[in-house]
Length: 196
View 1: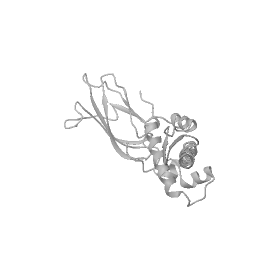
View 2: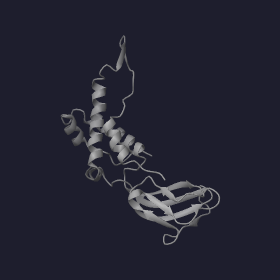
View 3: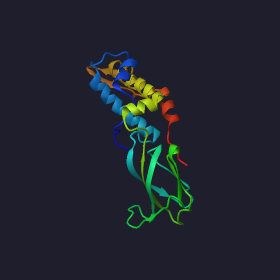
View 4: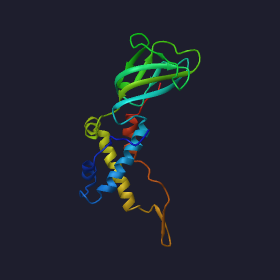
C-alpha cells in the first residue's frame, strides 16, 4: 500500500491537540501526519483514499468471501476469475448470478463455488474510506483525534526523549523506537479490515 493521499488528521487539529503555535513546526508536523497516515493505513489493512481501483485476490475452492482493501465499496464494475494471476484467459462473473457485494464490509461474496484448483479473482471497483482528508476527518473523527495525539507524541519524542537516549560523548542514540499510543491502536483496531 503506497503513501496515502488522504491523511488521517490535519495540521490544525494537531496544533489544537498539542497546544502548538501555527507555523513553528508545520513542515515537521506535515511529515509526521504523512507517516502516521501510512501507519494507520497499513495497520487497518484498508485504503484511506476512496478511488477506482483493481485488486487481485488468490482464491481456493472453499473461498466464499473476497475481502478488499478499499472498504467500504461504493461500486463494483467487474469481477473476473482466472486460473493464472496474469488474467490472459478470464471468466467474467455475472453480478446477477455469480456474486453479491457487501459494500460496507468491503466484501464480494462468491455465490458459485470457485474452480477445483486455486485461482484468482480480479475485482474492479470504487472504494476506500474517504475522497479527501476533510471528508475523512468528518467521517472518522475518532481516528483523526487519536492520530493528532499520535503526531504530538512523535513530535514531543523528537524534542524531549524523556530518558530514552544514551549519551556517549557527543553522540546520542535512542534505545527504543517510538511505540504507537495504546489509544491510537485501539481506535485503528476498531476499524480494521476483517478477512473471512
